Length: 149
Image (cartoon, rainbow, N blue to C red; front, side, top):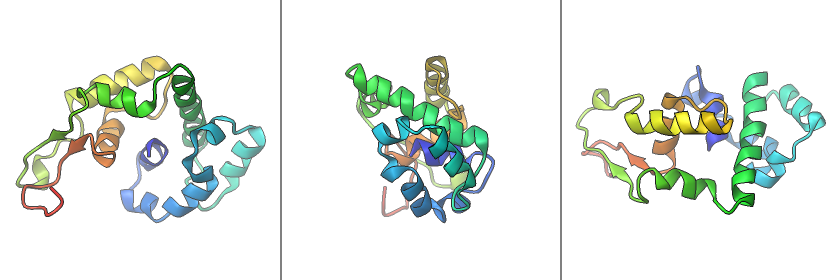
């Protein structure tokens, strides 16, 4: 999911969603071990793949971030555990009546972004991280009137 969120930077989410299946194939079903092991040949292939966003910085960040996540796993902590520790393993459920009330980033996303950057992650600004937290269920920003709340 972090790869898709990073790819979305500066683009519409619809642009990325349309390419999600191609991303899944290009990134070996988002298998962290496989992506972390991507070599120059695979990187070059990604940069030629018309089905994904072929931005060099975004492609490089996805491989870099996978390597860092793999390192976390090798040291006994999953990325899932790392993210959820910021909220004491309890989702944040916000109550909004209108989408205009939803922030693009929060103190939480700023804190996580800063920590990730310190660890060497790229394309993890506070707005990207806020969107990521929504996507993985750490933050529930569904409107109070939404059936999925």
